[in-house]
Length: 81
Image 1 (cartoon, one colour):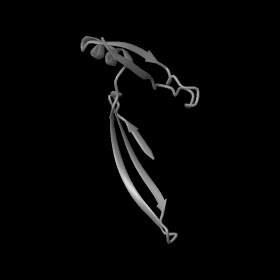
Image 2 (spheres, helix red, strand yellow):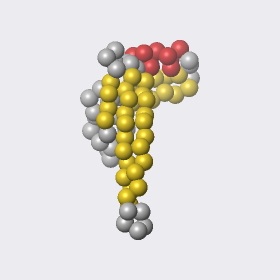
Image 3 (cartoon, rainbow, N blue to C red):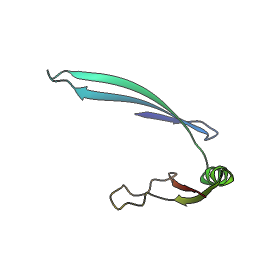
């Protein structure tokens, strides 16, 4: 995977190559390009709140089985009022 973040930190482009083994032992390659729009947690919370949601910003999912928090990542939990 190759990831490139825009200099203004508003977008992340990911180029991903995925290899899977076919039944006959050959490998099949699939290429994907993902574009992610990046937002500050306060901005997301404000937009959701203005749209009628109660919002909690968390540093991870509420499950003990998921990975530890990653730098710059957050979880937004929103409930309709």
